[in-house]
Image 1 (spheres, rainbow, N blue to C red):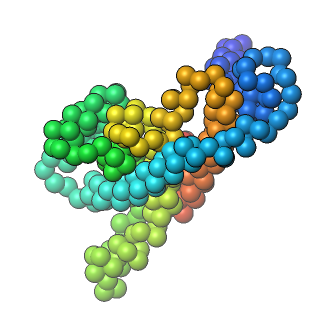
Image 2 (spheres, rainbow, N blue to C red):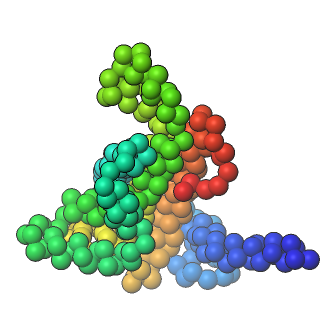
Image 3 (cartoon, rainbow, N blue to C red):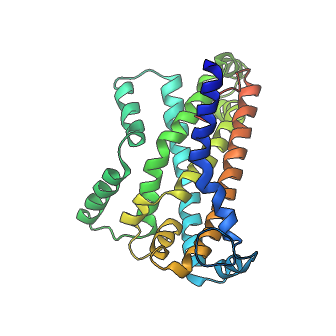
Length: 268
């Protein structure tokens, strides 16, 4: 009885959590402009309207540029941080890692306001570049968590064997270590890309006059006639997010299998 009640609670919780997402594609193909039942008909006009919107295409291009740049920067910095934390001992190691992981628990609105104040005080003009800086800061903890797991699961004897065979530290890192942690790198990059693409608060404070996809969606919620198009856009974004997270999880499990670790658990 206790186990059955727990399963029922879990099912109800998942239904409550994901029911709004499941409704997105239903109303995205509804011909009516009012988001309510009963449905009025089947149509694809909202997807056509979405692709024909020039402002939306500009916002999408900005978001893709920001997400790709933030993912690459966050993953590269995470490689250095994770390598240092798992391979070396140095004074202040715990404090440094704590500062790196701090954005994971800080409210994003506090991070956004702080970055805005600092950038304006330094005379930096708000643009896509400032959003990339903010998103890199937000994505770093997730990338570091994934890369730390990837580096900590390596067998140190492989690196020592490379040194015995005449490799330098750089060549051993490039030829031995990086190929072994490559699934973790890809997983961290995909995770950072997804987080940056969906992030709203930092972009709202730091984008200036440049629209991003989340800020554009927020601006269109004031117009009832734009809601069906937003539903269509939300359907596409959900499918993209699920695909990216599935690919990231695949590479995580592949990396765990290559290093002999258990593939159970989530991405983090």
